[in-house]
Structure formats: structure tokens, C-alpha cells
Amino acid sequence: MLTFCDTTIDSQRHESLEDGTVEFPVACYFDDLNQKSIPWHWHEELEVGIVRDGVITIRTPDGQCKLTKGDCYFLNSSVLHMIQSQDTEGCSTDSLVFHASLVGGNMDSVFWRKYVRPVTADSGITMLPFNEAGQKRANSLIQSAWLECLHSDYGFEANVRYLLTQLFVVINQKHPEISAANQKRIVQQSERIKIMLTYIKENFSENVTVQQIADSASISESECLRCFRNVLGISPIAYLKKYRLQHAAELLDATQWKISYIGQKCGFSEMSYFSKSFKEIYKRTPSEYRIRER
Image (cartoon, rainbow, N blue to C red; front, side, top):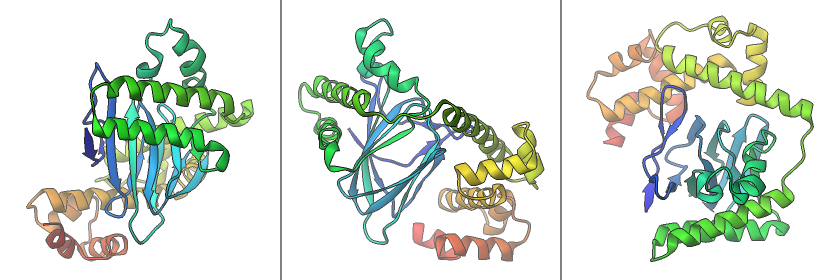
């Protein structure tokens, strides 16, 4: 079943899936990225996707990749990532989010041992783009799996499992190599970022400082700044501000609260600064945004 994705993030920036079952752990999504970018988050499940229209950028702790219409991608389990539009026109993606057990079965099986575990256990494999001529096989498998899930004809479950299993065969044959030292650094920074994002999520309405964010991950302030710059590409305070505004936008849409109260609840003590900052991101004032959304 197709779901128009409105990503739900819990207190640890972990995505809560709204679809998929224990019997068939797959969720099929459509995302309009001109309406809303997919914020930094992670999930235990694996993810594959297709750029349906426009140009997108996918960012992970070890870098970023630009994909255009028709390109596909693979995101490994528990990888911190975000996806945003790079196109002012239409920009959308189709994606499948699925548990590794769908392909691997139980952990004693040859499928798990030979094809799934080498990928999920390799922290050097974060995001794989399939945007080159030699990767047409991977693209075809991902697009076919998504369409099977979308149409849900009789037997589609078996077809989806087969197609994703074949994708793991391709990934095992061609996944990139990464040095042990670089791999350790990427994992360490990713785990620290997850801790600090959780701290921001839980305390964003307070007067949060860089030192407090750094303390949450037991690192120095300079290391905190370096970690945010290397992984997210912005400073901790810039991320905090962006998160506050994102939360404010959600409250403007979902509640009848006064705009001044929403600003205060999201950590803005001055209404004029809240309104100015909001307009910089959303191109309209909080009151204009509320009217348009409704």
C-alpha cells in the first residue's frame, strides 16, 4: 500500500514507521520534497528509493550525494540521514523501507550469512547511489520492487522479496571499500551526533548552549562544533534554530495556540525575532503560514 509520507520522529530522532507488518515488514512511501524535506533521522530498517522527479541531495555522516530523476539509492540500517530537494520545480521520491529479515530470514540461513549480514554489519556501507550506467541492474530491481508493492497483485510479496534479495547480491558484488581508520571515525561521529540530536530534541525550548550540547555526548565544545560541521554541515546553534522553527511550523498547523505562545514554547523569547527567523526559512510569517496550511 502506498503511503504519502509524513515522517514521524520519536525523541531519539528515530523514524516511526506507519506501515508494514510482522508478516511482511515493508512500507511503501511517496515523498513530495518540495512540500517538506526529510529531516535528519535514522531507523533500524533498510531503505531503497527512486527519484521520481527533480534533483535531490541525500546526506549521511560520511558525505552527500546528488541524484536526479530516475536514479536510485540504498540506505543501510541505522544510518543517520536526511533528504532534501535541490529543484524549485517538482521534486519527489518513491521509497521502500523494509526489515532485513524480509531478505535474510533467520540468522542461521545462508541468505542472512552470505548476503545480508556482510552489508548490515559493515558500517562503511552507509548510502549507495545507483546513478551510473553500470548500475542499471540495481535501478531495475528497486523500481520493480516498488511497483510490485504499490500494485499489490496476488503474489507481490514473493516478488518483492525476490527482487530485494537480488539487490543484495548486486550490493555484495560491488559495495565500496573503506579504510578501517576512516570507518571508525565515521561511526564515532555518527553515534555522537545521534546523542546530541536527542539532547536538542528533549531541551530545544530551553536556553541551550553549545557547551551543554557537547556535554551530552561527553566531548569538548570544539569537538562538538567539528562533529556538527563534518556530519550535518551546520553549527549546533544553527541546527537548534532550524529544529525550533520546524517544530513551530508543526504546531502552527496542528494547534489553535496563539502564535506568541508557540514562539515561546519553541525557545524564542522575542516575537519579532521568531517571526523574522520563521520567514527566512518558510518565506512567510507564522500567521501567513498558518492561513496557507489551513
